[in-house]
Amino acid sequence: MIDNQHILEICSYAKLIPVLVIDEVSSAVPLAQALMRGGLNVLEVTLRTANALQAIHEISQLDDVVVGAGTILKPEDIEFVKQAGAVFGVTPGTTSALLDSAIEQQFSLIPGVATVSEAMKVNERGYSFMKFFPAESAGGVNALTSFAGPLPGIRFCPTGGITIDNAPSYFELDNVICVGGSWVAPKKLVNCGHWDRIETLARQAKNAFEKHG
Ligand code: 3PG
Image 1 (cartoon, rainbow, N blue to C red):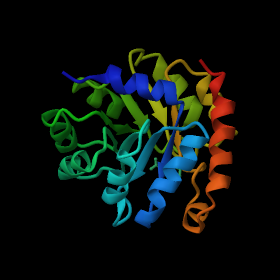
Image 2 (tube, rainbow, N blue to C red; image 1 turned 135 degrees about the horizontal axis):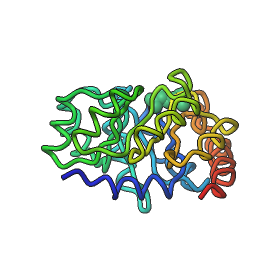
Image 3 (cartoon, rainbow, N blue to C red; image 1 turned 30 degrees about the vertical axis):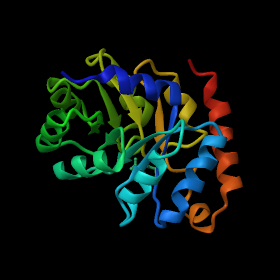
């Protein structure tokens, strides 16, 4: 049985899940703290760097943070991210092997889909909350509006090309409960340790999205 509700509640409260690319382990904690000071405490660390697992581990030791792993591509990644301390995972697309692994390990997953057929296949496996990726290039708000008719029970976290400016139009949709994006933690600012600027970006997003129920 897939526990969609738990992860759905966490994400629905968070509204924005920052998508993080962390090169240096030493950036992990100050980055997470900056985002948390700005009001964001559900974080996705992508498996796109050699240090991602260590970064997840360090962030998972902080209080009041919910850390997940993104860019999960291989079934065996799930075991590694779980061991590192990730409490949820996000995939850009979905394979049966990934779903098998997540289900077997009872790991909360937000599977990535870009089309109605993909969403139907993932839904057949018990998932009703999915990442819509790459949101802007896969049809954006118009696509999700069209998904709502035939797929009334499915909720999405659109990611890919989302910004503070276009996010509000996604929040108008009943099938969107949060968005994901890297704009609050641009790689340049992370690598230069501009934590105050990241905190400001996080706060701006938090304030802008708070009003969306
Ligand atoms: C992701 O992996 O979810 C995306 O790369 C994030 O997309 P963005 O960089 O356009 O926000």
